[in-house]
Amino acid sequence: MPDSRRTDLVLLLVAIVWGSSYLSAKTATVAIPVLAILFARYVISALACVALVAARREPRRCTRDEIRFGSLLGVTQAAVLVLETYGVAHTSAANAGLIISLTIVLTPLLDRTGRRGGLPPRFFAAAGVCVLAVGLLMSGSGLRTPGAGELLMLVAAVVRAVHVVLVGRLTAGRDLRPLHLTTVQTVVGSALFVVPAVGHLPVLIQTDAMTWAQLVYLALFCSVFAFLAQTWAVQRTSASRASLLLGTEPVWAVVIGIGLGGERLTVLAALGAVLMVAGTYWGQAIERAHRAATTKAKTVCRTTTPTSA
Image (tube, rainbow, N blue to C red; front, side):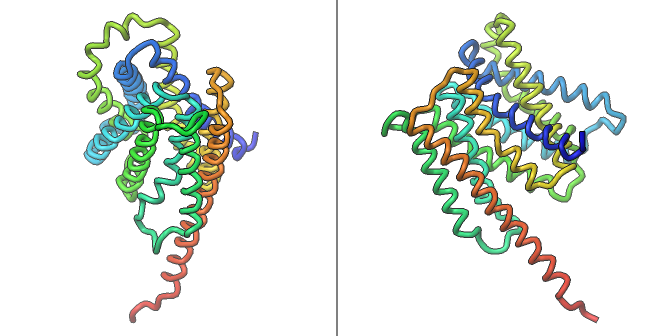
């Protein structure tokens, strides 16, 4: 199999895994409390990351920057997972996956680093399509007050966008190892949830094998595997191609939610799903083209600016 095809398949697998995480998390919340789910997910992830670090030949000790930035990102990532898990517990997995994809258009709005001028007006049109899509997804079978689950997922999309921007700003120009950075984040997350989850530990210990399998899946596949596989694949392809494949996550959330979870989309929600996917892809393409044009303009400016004698 050609390397390019293998890389594409890995990125697509990451998108499928992330898309499936909403149904897995929703199913787990039926059996055990959200805080117990998050604690177990973080502890399993941390143990796996520590084992991977110990197995590598490179220096195992985390640097000061990896500990400092990993701790901050661990807090923001924990906030994202709290909102997402509570949100998916009160809405459908399909809706959760679609609403969280707002991150794609929110991130460029928040990240102004190194960009000359504002985003093109077309980008805001794409963002408007996404906002309309969220309204349709929240409406269900008719106009109504948005539910707690949809609102939590909306806040989660904003916080996730903040987290993504922080990742970009904190790691830019620094020699930070992805595995070590992830290890610090998972350890910090485990520490954050140990006290809130302590009262739920008996329920967690006594839960059935199916729920434990879902927790292991969320930790090892949706967290550790997905991050490391994404990093490996992005290094072997273009950012545009990677974002295109990873952007199919909400599609898989709908497919898995309906196909395996037995969920249903009303006519309005289905229209919202179509608009959400179209709006995020449109906005992503506009932002990518704008970023490429800005980079090209900077390069031309540097090459044409006369140097002093």
